[in-house]
Amino acid sequence: MSDNCLFCKIAAGDIPAKIVFEDDRAIAFEDISPQAPLHVLVVPRKHIATLNDLQPEDTELAGHLVQVAAKIAADRGHDNSGYRTVFNCNADGGQTVFHIHLHLLAGRSLTWPPG
Ligand code: 5GP
Ligand code: ZN
Image (cartoon, rainbow, N blue to C red; front, side):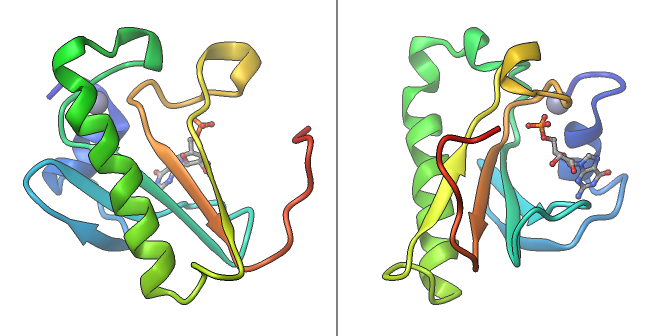
């Protein structure tokens, strides 16, 4: 846990969130400002500030986050219609919370390229 990290505090249960999945490695909760009918953030319990900070030993964890997102999408019935997963990184990527998180967006047709 990193001091003053919002997502570490949510993972620890110190700040409330609408949790949709959790296990020993990850937690997923609804985004406070949803950009699609389903907008969930899949977050590792381990504090990793940005994708630039991923280490070789995090490879399995990163894959787990993707699989958690796919499972939530399927559980909500979006597997065939489709969905988007996004990791934003640093300023140009639009990252505002510096604890990596995989956005899962579904429930509407999403445009490409993103803004
Ligand atoms: P980023 O911009 O870093 O890729 O994504 C951060 C996301 O966290 C944003 O979509 C934002 O709406 C969400 N967020 C920020 N603060 C909170 C919070 O306190 N609770 C929840 N559930 N989501 C938050
Ligand atoms: Zn953190």
